[in-house]
Length: 407
Ligand code: GN1
Ligand code: MG
Image 1: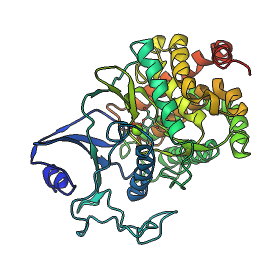
Image 2: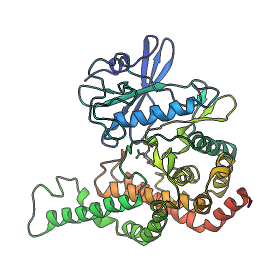
Image 3: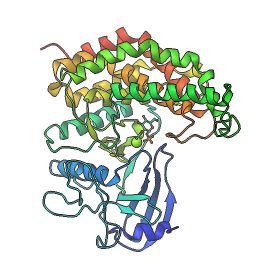
Image 4: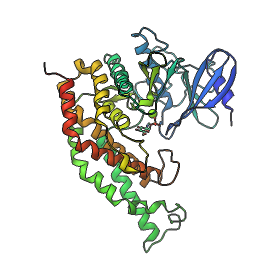
């Protein structure tokens, strides 16, 4: 296996490498911080099960960050700086067939070869960006001011990209597409039931046995209550999704992973500097960014706390985030977006329940898990959060009304 040092050296980094250490604990990618004699960099192994076309993803990120750089005062601080390959002549070219809008040989319109990621000999994809010095991240929304700044960060990100008009590749098929999520869900449930049948029915199949799957195949039998939660809310979620499909709620450039730890804050002023982790930047609704932020900031505990009595949506956090967000975006949202703002956190929290539960039923193939019930614990936690949001729905609506005065 190629060493991290060798992989880092594939990129156009400045100075000699001094150290490479793991960073953070994302559910999806593996992240390292590379320190050289001149700068620090973030090196990531992109999860290819989650991102089937890493070159397309990196082109999205390069296009979006270039657009932002053209508009801000401090281009090296106010968005990510993607580090290209040092020698884009070796096998590190992104040679795989790529998706729209780029042609098969991976050349962009100006003929330049895509050079933002490296494929190692084992088929793993790597990418690198500059570490922005003098910044901090936060895991927990520990104050209302921090929360308000987080809202500003996402509002500003969306505002800076409001006039971005290049097509973006769909890096994860149907990421927030509820119709597609239900298709996946229905297939997952059917497949799970079939597995149980094969393992226990009269025509027993040795490949599908409780032993060979560590008992995971019986998970479907343990989650009737959670499955019922999904089914009970299906129609309501599709009603909202139909409004997106009909164009009543517009699709825009969205970040799609707006949790607090994806915002960099200036270490001195405490102000939001930029949104990071741009892997999921795609066309989506602005409301999804709002919903995911509230889902992650406003939970009174972590999303995998097994003690669901600690789970609730904090209305003060909701208000503070919305205040920051709307300070950047209120003037450019459509009436339809404003109307559906309070529903956004319920939609995304529900989607997260579906994703965690589906992964549990599927045997933990998507999210990293630290113990066998991890995805089930996350599912239950998010159901409790959804219920808390539902209870406070009228209050959430009132907050939005107060923050967006009628013209
Ligand atoms: C994943 O890996 P991380 O923490 O950035 C996921 C998000 C989920 C989140 C749940 C590409 O994000 O959609 O909301 O976990 N990202 C992807 O914590 O699936
Ligand atoms: Mg992410």
